[in-house]
Image (cartoon, rainbow, N blue to C red; front, side, top):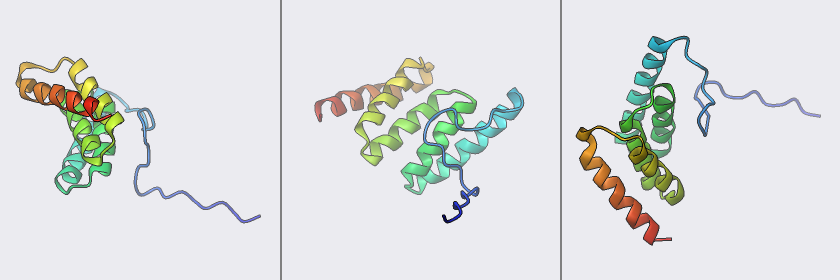
Length: 119
């Protein structure tokens, strides 16, 4: 029987919440969230929606926020993953973002309507 292949450790591979190590404390969580958000923004601006989604999800895992949720929804939308985009847009709206996100809330509501009609 061949030996099992070692897993690559160079890049995080989680596909859903909870697969990242817990932070040591609140300060550490904030640091990890900032690092993940910056990486997500780079991937997003490069058009690498899958890696951007992974990092936005990671940022939101460590410090929940409206912007990572919205960006995650945009990533799924751009990837053509209608189901995940719908869920993510709704989670963004349900997070009760502050007034400074009113334009994004309106866009999320619009995209939800559009995605629901393209079933």
